[in-house]
Length: 153
Image (cartoon, rainbow, N blue to C red; front, side, top):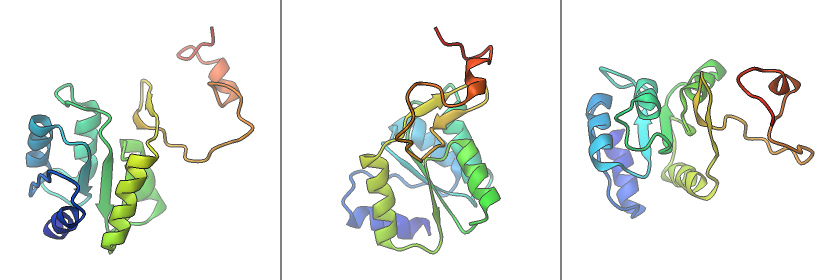
């Protein structure tokens, strides 16, 4: 799968493509090369794509905590999607997928970047995708106004 993704990326002429056969090597390349985007597979060893995403988002040695991470997986259950989202994955792509699907995900990451959220329990892209035309302010829930961590000034 890794070789196929690399071939598709090269065919799309996206620029430099770095490849690693596991997430540990992938994070070393990420620290050294600071790529614009990471495409990871959920099922890697010795650490998986979720753990790699957490390293990118939380490790103080990460050169870019906000780098988009596209997670490729054979799992499509909602619990898995939620786990990936909560780890800070930017986009989720279920196998099998086509070159066109990968190109669409890359274009989406580039053309519609999401704001990043930094709270005591989460760092990553905003998990809300829905745009609410009636929303009128920085806070979305009534509890946001009563929480000691988030105060309105």
